[in-house]
Length: 166
Image: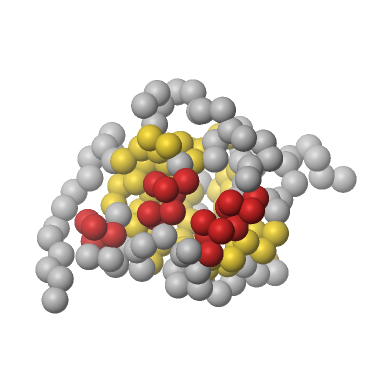
């Protein structure tokens, strides 16, 4: 039996990484929560988007703090403004895209485990103001392989960036 200890994470503390052009601050990981969940704060610019993907093991909750996201879950699209939440249950394909000039949001995933993928495929954020150069396009085959290790299926590309829509 794992005994989980209470903890508190101050606003300016966490494990910071750059991941595919986004700054992520992990406020809690599975080691902190007895494997129950992980929580990260993400800051991204307009147009940042996640590829369409499906989790076998995890549910995800998006909590928008500032800005606006467009979040697709299954066949629905939600316009998520500051203060809103959007739930993406495991087994349903989902994606999100930043619609405002910048967005700051929380991602809560349960159970924990998938957060390790971000640490394996991201890089520590030494300088928090400038993202590292991003390989464009990313190594799609490598991305698919790395996601399969976590029972996550890449289903499709990210949404089209704002302004590119017809």
